[in-house]
Image (cartoon, rainbow, N blue to C red; front, side, top):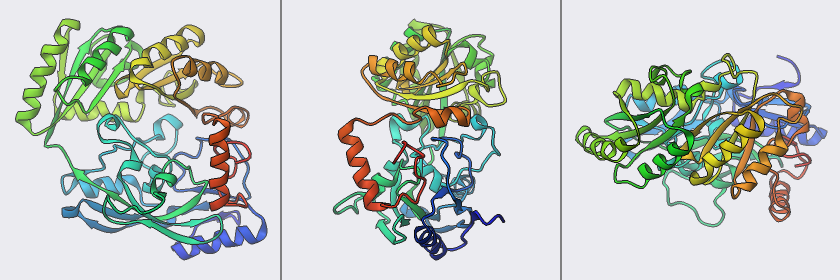
Length: 410
């Protein structure tokens, strides 16, 4: 193994590695199995701290809905374990491998928390941070610390779980994490509304989310995006999808409510349990924009805004940058694939987000040279940036861990 690639096998070795970097004035790239390595600013580090050697579930009490695992444990391993007990990670963490063109199934539980991942069920179950109970980690000071525990109501003082979720390894290297699991729905169905334009689809999604149908996922796939997912392609045009989960009688009753509500807008279709799971896996993992597909050479943006403004945002990007789109989270999450540009159209994208009332824009896929020059994450307002700097100085005053990955100089 190269001298600049460090792969600890124990948590104590992580602490020793960071202390070594601190003493030598070196910087560390913190990764699990590298599935999201190409997300973030393209910065330079002296060595890689590879946490994939910290693998394995350390505690799983299915009856208590709690699981602990070392940070480098593959998500696939955890999902298989909980599925065997008819449970799931309800935040439905996405797999970026197809979008980034890396080996499938490389995502880890620590990486999911560090990136605060969530899938289509975000509108009902929340993101990773909402299921994150506790952790052990090593700060940039080379100090091991713990926070949280094995129950939801365990926070006194600062909620460090919320702080580390979404920090992209810039505050501490997590070595062990604890998350809650939830019972998996007995069954699911997906109701499709066919052929809607984006504007009408936006209104339909708002109506469905305000109904008694208790929808657990809502997405709109324009014709180009729908054609790249097998379960939607047969419709021959745009598809607006709504997932219903639960026990069979409840799903059937709510499906009737939803059909009555949506029938006036267009033709309806339906997917059974197996097809429904396949469709939402494809939406979760952004299959319409896979690196090997027709949009694979485009720069990819992840845009979150108010659900009622998502379609307006998409329209601006389509008109001004020839964007290919699809919408998740009932319109609150817009995936936009734009033609390659030296700055990935960052100015246009951020102006469009601001024009619809604000939100967040993250550049998910672009060449390293573009990511080195453009703002990958949404620039922070001065007051928030000052707070971020103070937090970073508390955990990692010497900028040892992933410096510059989120923002230049941070």
